[in-house]
Image 1 (tube, rainbow, N blue to C red):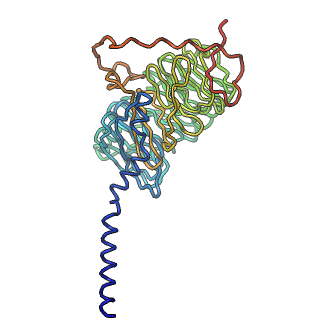
Image 2: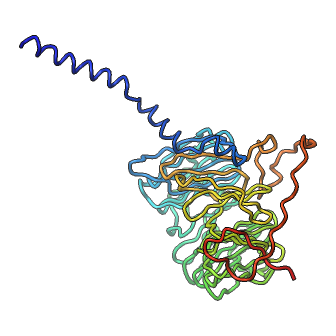
Image 3: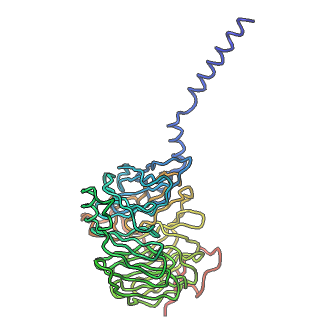
Length: 441
């Protein structure tokens, strides 16, 4: 009996050691989970895509989720609900910095960037960081709580507030006061102007070379001189603006609660074309790529319009939002979160990818890259396959594109697919998966 008692602990210890050896390490288990979540190379190749890189934002997955994801031509910025911010290099995926900004769990606005800096409004403070190193350059207490994300130029920053005010600050003056350790006491000296409207500012300001455009709940669209609070023009709408405004090539694209899309000249407020009636509420930002504008009304599918005339060129049922675009393709989502690939020319479906696990899909209208993230901060970057796609296509700043030599194609291009016949007026029946085009006169 005494001998059997001494053997039992030895057997238990041996069994525990063997189980510990067989159990996967936390690192390998985590790698396995990511492998199951990331889109496979086989699926991507099937659709002419490649995975550029993947990375993990710094956050606590037991309590935090991704609050905002912002992409410009250089970096990807991931903001967690806790206030932790992580930045990645766009093309290589290298995690270049991370920082904790503001009080933990404080409400924040999406980051904005210019050529050198990143700006984040959290609670009632505005933080400025070096975009490439993450160094905190200054923080400024704001006179009012922001109601939208800021807008920034190279030397000014603007933001709207809940009391209907738009504030403009001089970035150079802020930096001077910070270096003198006077920003906390004399920060108000960096404020250039304040313009007061009747009600809350509802859209992030749009900054051009000369003016700042924004919308208010008082059913008006304003254009203010950037250097001084002088009203350039004011356009009253029959109903409030319902989505963030888009600016492209001198024109503003504005969705309103009357279900219409308007296009106005940013300099004088004149209408470029007659309002386009979508027939459904438009809550998402209009997306302008080249000479096409895409709108995604609630339960209304996707409308593709000409930026020159405002006329509908095609319509696709079942599409809910924009993800990205290349020269020939449009990447969108459906109501369950799948990526639906469309042909830009006529809206024909080219393929569908089941990527519902990526709950954060950045609507990239700057380049042809796709950036998808899980709510827990796993980020993946995707591009189209081919040597000619190794460099990004810049939609808003084409002058950034490198000049590449042209080569004759090795194989002849496939014959063009015939255009689909025009569909009758009115919305397609539920469940119809065909793109419709307006009848020609």
